[in-house]
Image (cartoon, rainbow, N blue to C red):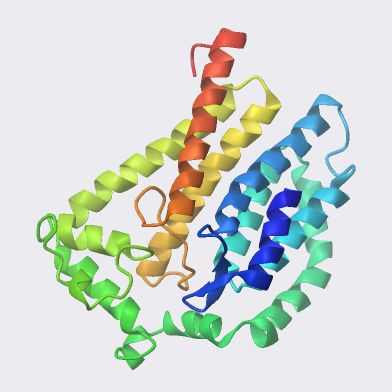
Length: 295
């Protein structure tokens, strides 16, 4: 985790700017690897709390400091989408760690005195013009269909023109120059255009299977550390899918979040494949050590 934070600092100092975000260094995107790093560190923290029967809040200062540092450094790139995803991944593991729900609600209410003003300040004064434009564009992209809403409008056209069965594999019109960056964040719009609703449905079933399988492994895993990792991996893949689909359909602001296993991007694909490898290792480990062949 310390190494990841160091890389994020290097990105802000010597990073390469791509699409208004300084997120790259040495051809990799450290924020993607920090998603997996957050899972491992957060899972280890809460697993130790369970093993030692300690209060879940005990010693949480270091963890909160690391998460806050990661959020701030990624946000400054600016890459608010990845920053919020990392917080969401950490929070999902936190919710499954055995925390008292009533105590959590009380702390959230008390904490709102501090984080609501911070959120207001973030939206009003700290967001870049690009981020503000992405938020306002989803309200009605057709107001400026040839300008700020161009990418989103062409995403709608790609999705709508695919129909049930699509135009056919490789026959997309929007990817020939109408929809910018069709191979990255908007790849699912092209999948919809070429393979239609059926193709998108098959891809989503595949992703949902991975997420549900992750949660199943977490449920049956005897080791708390492995269980929390499985939860984090499932939530990471699920959250990225939801945020990406929400962006191309106008439900959420565009964040640059890739669709797992489908969008172009070496860092994202490598992290997801490593995550699947870890997930399989957890499953096999439990089968061998604990003779738990239900996983």
